[in-house]
Amino acid sequence: MRHSPVWLIAPALASFVAAPAFAVQYLGIEQAQVRIVLGVKCHGGNDGRPDASAAPALHARAARACTGGRRVPGTIRSRPSLCGGERGEHLRHLRDLELDLRRHGPAFPDAAFLRKWAAEHDAADWGHALGRLLDALSAPDLQAAPLAEMIESIQEKERRRAEMVDAAEALYAKVGWDAVTMDRVAKSARLSRALLYVYFRDKNDLLHAITERSLRELRERFITAAGEHATGIDQVQAIGRAYVLFQQEKPYRFDACTRFHAHQAEGYPAEDACAAAGDAVIRVIVEALMKGQADGTIRKDIGSPVQVCIMRWAFTHGLIQIASNKTVEIARQGVDIPQLMEGSFGMLRYMLAAKPGG
Image 1 (cartoon, rainbow, N blue to C red):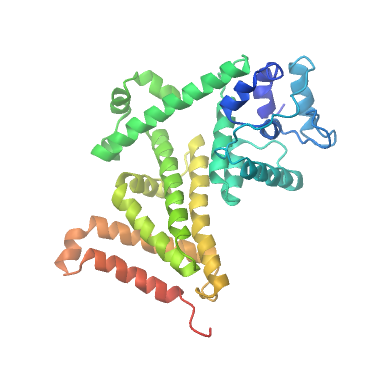
Image 2 (spheres, rainbow, N blue to C red):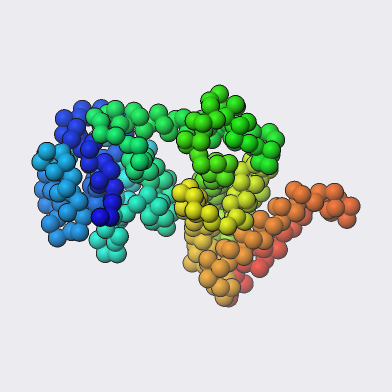
């Protein structure tokens, strides 16, 4: 039988009815999210009953069987959400996700699907948080326990994992990735090498965790840069400069992104999270290009926004690498690197800009 998230979290639902509000607040999820995790679609009342016509209803009924016939409580009010307290935004994402699942499936969304969906619907942070929750609840070593205890265990594991990634990042910034080893990370994090391998399969798995962080930061930088300008073409220019600044301020994170985009998929679970984070970065650029075409500042005859985004990304990424790795050669030609960067951005702007009356 195909397993879905409901089989993994059903043991915890037995305590959900009696669990204090603290447990739900501690986790930061709401009843609607529990329904999504279970694959349950509820209509009408708020008694937690699934729509009998929905495919996930069978799994929801199985979950109730595991809880001694008790239902998940109907309504949990005024709790923090996965959007950092922005309840309205959180509920909007849930509504859009539920509608999409009804129309297109799948019946049992997993963490990878949620991250990909969220990246495509400008909800990357929300999807990341919900995906991480599903990952934790899908752990093979998850045992039946009161929900509050499960929450504490999951958060403790997340805290430890974050500390390990912090240690790896610090070494990355100090000695470069090629010199980083699992032994050095374990020593820096003050934990055993065996425990590090419990959380990360190998060094590449750690790199994926750093890459995901890096791409999420890059997206935030792009959003901030674009938000400071009104026209699409100015937003695109600002995003390019933000990319340069990202490399200058966090060269190890820029390098992590470069390594990820150059590597071949190897089946690591974290690869999906990185891919979703990368899609979210691209979406910011595409939206700026689309805005420029809509407001008349960017030409419409240069191809699709996605194609233009990839071309501009390739140009800017290569320019940054040359400027940072070939400084001696560039200086020998009598070229000033800051002027080279600005001249390049000026050329790109000229190529993108709509002609007056065009």
